[in-house]
Amino acid sequence: MMIPVRCFTCGKVISHLLEEYKRRVEEGEDSGKVMTDLGLDRYCCRQIFMSSVDIMKEISQFKT
Image (cartoon, rainbow, N blue to C red):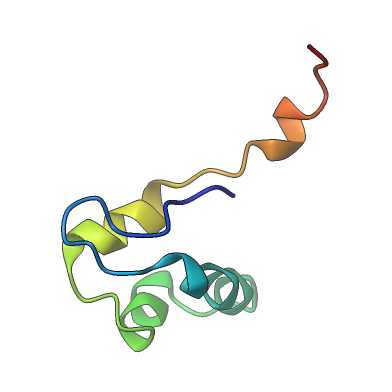
């Protein structure tokens, strides 16, 4: 998944939280609670995590 290093709106560094977020959500925790625990309180940071889609597997199938 490719997310920005910093939030577009507030500038908070968020990329280092992605692996922890993915791991905990896959274990069955509520995504909203996980984001709150990780310190993502602003809606601008939360929307980046909620709207990111992992498309690298689909893209890597095509050669240029």
